[in-house]
Image 1 (tube, rainbow, N blue to C red):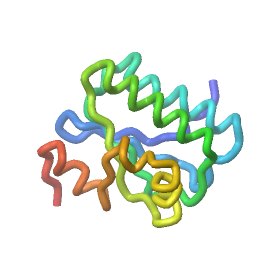
Image 2: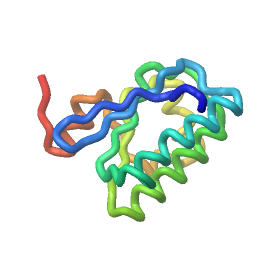
Image 3: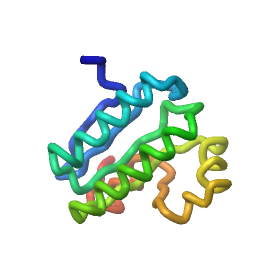
Image 4: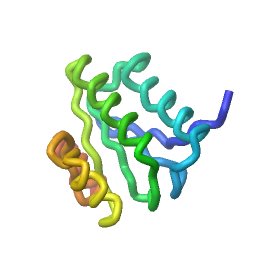
Length: 121
């Protein structure tokens, strides 16, 4: 099995997923990323998800499809998916594709955790 492309941390019932890669462009990485993310909703039933983009500088449009599917999977288990720490160039991709209307965005993980009622220093 391929190495996980994400780091998963739990904070008071909220799952924070941080991408390990700064560049998410090749299909093998993207396929593994999808499997890792879908496992959280499909097998572990994680309902409060924060995807942290702090390490990401580049991503393929194929990743957008994975994130849309993850959002649907999350909604199917009555979950909530939010994003944080997007660099301005990445945020432009979400805006241009109108995905900024589908997802909630926060400036950092603390603000995203606060959205779920978790306060960290």
